Image (cartoon, rainbow, N blue to C red; front, side, top):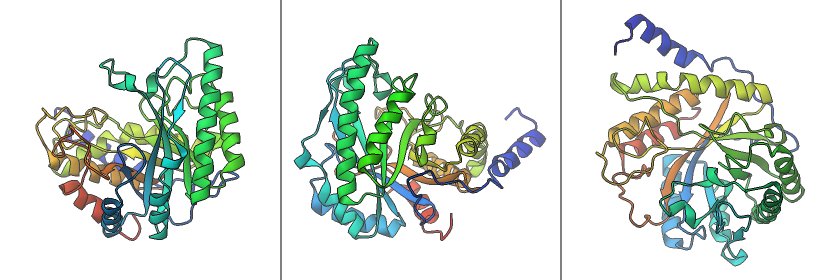
Length: 353
């Protein structure tokens, strides 16, 4: 609030003007970018990646249709017992969610399959996560990439079988994408051999996207967009849009550098005070609930992502097949039944965001 008003309004103008006039993104070869326009997406989560609750997801497909959703992101999993160990254990092939993906596509939705590697060590109080996966030496890295390549190729084969339109070769492996470009290029080649659709990688926007060395081998730049955009002071969230300016600047440049569109493969905010400062921070349940801030954050993101051609879609984190145990719905990322859902509906039912 100490900033002069003239600077504030000039910066707000910049927030809207930066993406304007961007050249149309060039589709990457050999994948073909879908022609259906902006990806109106949601992440739909099943606690174990199998989507076993048919009655729930049948009703949710109706709900998503009413919201104007056109794309659904499906999460599958493999377990990595040790964050610093190379072993990766995919879930049994019989548990892959073929029924859900086929049902969603039969209803006219397009599907992004985004396989995850998880570890019980993520939940041991050490604050480790996918970005912490790191091997102690080159030999162990070689084993990890071999195991990971086998896992992701298997997932890609099944994604091709069920007709998923888009596939992510990985996500947020911050340490694994540093200095390992050749290994990722080899994995992408393996996937291309078995999967004919559009390929992306879902990079952590804060710590990874700008050091990824294989964007040119993919069709779409995927960014998990949990950015600090400040705390709102002005009514209506106008200053949240201002907070997007530095992030839009480098993402637009990244899109133009590689001739690829950007899709926010994840974006979201818990419905709590402070969510726009640390949107990556999972709520503990002790925070002050603020669904209005979540709604303002949704609107600000959609406003900056739909100006120009650099951004071609958003997948909102997230909707649940069944509520996750131990998570307060009032605090969590789900927009279901909250003001943010009305914002999502308004934007997604607009003919051309």
